[in-house]
Every structure is written in C-alpha cells, then in structure tokens.
Length: 566
Image (cartoon, rainbow, N blue to C red; front, side):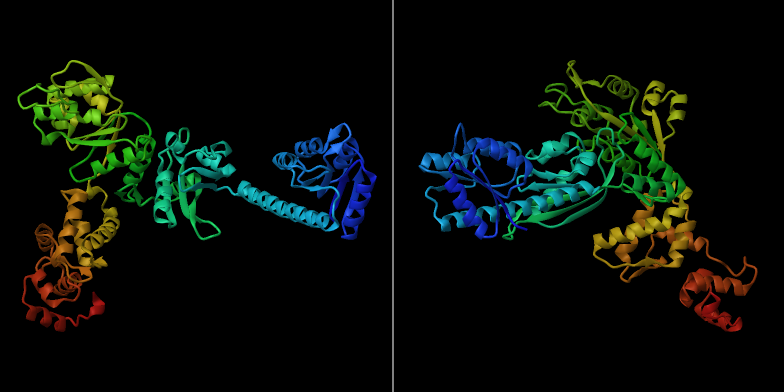
C-alpha cells in the first residue's frame, strides 16, 4: 500500500514541489494550505507522515504538532522552516517532531527525510503491534506473570497477577517486597534464588496465606531474563493458582503427605484437614498423643502453614527444666532478680512475639507456673522475673502432652481453667499401632531420607522385615520405626534390609512369633512357613524352627517342598 503523506504549507509552490517529488517516489500525497484545513484532513485520514511549515498564518506548525499528539496519532511530523536556528530545531524536536528541514528544500534531502520518517513509523507500528499482541497474550493467560530487574523492582505484571497476587500496573517500578505486606513472601525468596543463581527454579504447592485467601495454593516457576546481548537483566515469574485443583485432589483422593507429616490413614487425613482449618486461626491448640507420634511436627505444620510463618516459632520442653529455670526461660528476668542474674534476659514468650510458642510436655508444669501461663494466654501480658512492669506480647500458643490432662484436672494436678484455655481445639494423634496401614509409606519415606543421610542405595526391606513391622506393637510409635530403620541402615551393606539388621527388640519379637513344628497343624506347613519367612534360606529357617539345618533339608526332601510352594 502507498504511504499517505500530508503537506501543510501556506506557499503553493512549496506544496506543489513537495507533492511532485514525493508522488514520483510512489507516495499518496495530500496538501493543505492552513492549520484548520490540515486538522480537518487529519480527522478524516490516517496519515503516515506530515510535513508542516512552522508559520501557518495565525497558527504554527507546533500547534499542529500538539493537536496531532493530543489526538494520539502515531504519524511522525517533520517541520519546514524558512529561517532555521538551533533554538527552532531543538524546540521542535523537544516537543515531539521527528525532524526538520530548511527552505529551500533540496529534492534529495526531502526524499531522504521522508524515507527515514516512514521507516521510523513502520518500526513504531511494528513495535506497537508486537506490544499489543503481547498484552493480549498477557491478558488471556490465566497464570500470573511478573518480571523484575536485578534490583527486585517490578518491570511488568499482567491482569492475572492482580487477581492472584494483588500486583497491578500501579506496582510497576516499585520494589517486589511490597508482597511481604500481603502474603508469606515466599515468591520473593524464589525470585531471589533465581537472581543469585541465574537458574530456573520450580516449586509446587506453595501456601500464600494472603488476607482473604488463606487457602490459596500456587505453583511457581522463575527463570532468568537475558537481554539481546546475552546479559542477565532480571527474572520472570509465572504463578499458577492451583487452589481449586488442590481442593479437588484432597476431595478425590487421600494425601500421602502434609508438611512433614507422612500418612494416608483416614485419621491422618482428618488431621491434615484440621491443621489447614487451624493454620491461620489464632486460637490455642492442644496436641495430644503418645510419645513418638509426631506432636512437634504438627506444631511445625500449624505454624508454617499459617500467616505467622514469617515470624518466630519458639519451642520449649517444659519437662526438661526446673520450675525456677522454666519461669526465667518463659518470661525472662531482669538483672539482680536472683543470684546469678547478672544481666537482663529476654524470655521465650517475648522472643516469640508476633509468632508462635510451642509448649511441649505442658502436663509437667507446676501449679504456680500454670497460673502465670493462664494470665499470658488470657491477657497477652507477662511480667519478667524481678520486674512488675507488664509486657504485652502477640503470640499464638500451641501446647502438647502425652498425658491425660482431663485425669490430672480430676485429681487436682492441673488447673481446669488452664486446661480449657489450652484445649480450645485438640489435635489427637493416633498411635502407630492404630495406623499400621501407613507403615509401608513411612518405610519408603525413611529409605529416601537415610539413603541421602548415609550416602547409600538401599532400595527396600525384605518381606519378612515388612511382616515384622506390620505385626509389631510399636510402643515408641513413629519415632521407634525411624530409629529401627536408622539402626538397620548403619549395619546393612547391601541394597535390601534383612531382619538380621533389625534392633534386638524386633528380632526377639520375631523369634517369639516364629512358627514351631509342635503348634502347627502339620510338620510340612511349619517347614513351608519358616522357609517363606526366611526367603528359602535353610539356615535361617532352621533357626526360626529351633532345629538343625540338616533336619530342614531332610524335611524338604521328605515333603517334596520346592521354592514355588512358598
């Protein structure tokens, strides 16, 4: 298509000359003799280039330039001047003119200037189309897209970024840490890793904890931005909102893991859901369960899944300290409060300000400490030892015990009012013997953990070991299972853990349950069962049965037992 050029000059000879030269170059040329005629033509036609005389009767070419800019036309404007000067030229360029030419105009200068201006127009149009297409893509993509420079300032963000992260066009140019006021700031940490390593980082199932969107779950991918010269200029983040998908997955199938808790048992599923409900609720929680069931892991999950996750989680084992030491540890003291108090000390409650304090073995604290703790929970105010000045704290209290506090209340060993303050919501963890269906999953988890820890490549446990695990009563619960596998890892020098690598109590338990020839229906059944448990190892089968290896061989021959029989 021909380029459309408008010539605006009050001299007819100039209009004719320009029109003649530019028409010969194949352009579609229109002329106007004054400002008003030019404005009318511009309103009717999208010109690709305008040549305008500086002097246009009562108006100027600068006035025309301003009108073109105000109407948001993209065509370049070249000024025509009869008396060029540095001031005239600089003023025209400063106000947005593409260039200027002086009268009398030479044909080659005119054509060269027109060619450059039209090339500039074509490039601008191409960039505008490119940006328009890019913006259309940005608008249509449902994932949030955010780009930052090396100083963590936001360069660009699409509409989805506003919906998912509350980052909009007004955020451009501002530092990324504005996120910290609205969520857990985990996006910032991921961006930081990409900026530092200049590598792509991918994360799954991130909890945002954004106000009003406490359960928002996202996956995040950050990649480095490379400029045309190959230099590193920043990073781009793509955030996909998977809240609904996460909810559907939870509804349709059991989760095998939540935070650092492992298990797909129905009771564990209910606990996962309860933790999610409690994570950002500031109520006090009491975690109950036998030793080794994972009470501390629940406290971690409650804190790090909630909106206090960026603030401290302070843990106190109440049974490990005497009353006087516990009082000082929890509430702090001032210099001179007691013998040996040579300086002020900040207590655990103050250290946990705006975060969470986890009080483990809460059932072991004295009546006096119970009273002091009750006041802190009720009033969020404490007094340091040796000081009567009240100190306000903003804390969430999570307590845990392996004791039956209701019985301690009944016998007057635990304050009823504190008990009910602690037990606003109870998370009761099941014993290992009540969730044995989780044992294979836990074994798989610990195999991965200890392979990394000991730099080994142990792939599995034998069927006999798994049978022992499934039938054992586990008085030490999950912690005992973990310790048993760690013990086995240390002793095992092959890729499968056999029962002879287990701790003594498990071996003794296994031997106590071994089949015997006298208490089974038949001799052959006992031999087959022992061989099955020993994996066709005749020596081990003999030990299980309490007979000699030679006897085992005789019985195999007598009953014609083959490996297929086991």
